[in-house]
Image (tube, rainbow, N blue to C red):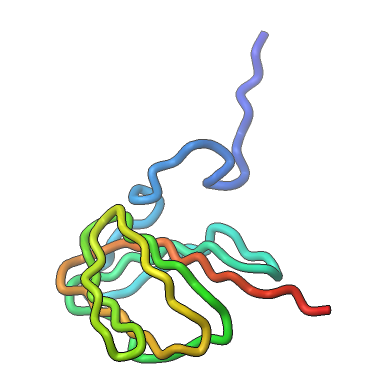
Length: 115
């Protein structure tokens, strides 16, 4: 007799990130996959024309595009980032994202441990 093991986390077994979150018309949607004091993994889906306005964070982050392509501005320089590519968003440097086409990205936020 065999028992099926039920995964309690989407990354408890191999997954295609692109399938873990659906696009929604006229919206930006997100799904947090991992949330720890030292960092987070968050999946985002941006519909065409959507984006995030310029901001900065006190932590380094990496954006990995899993579908489509994004226009990401870092420190005033625009980068066209395609599916399969990653881009570093350094701490305290202003950045913004826009969706010339629908795109999905994994945001890896890295925090330093205090103390």
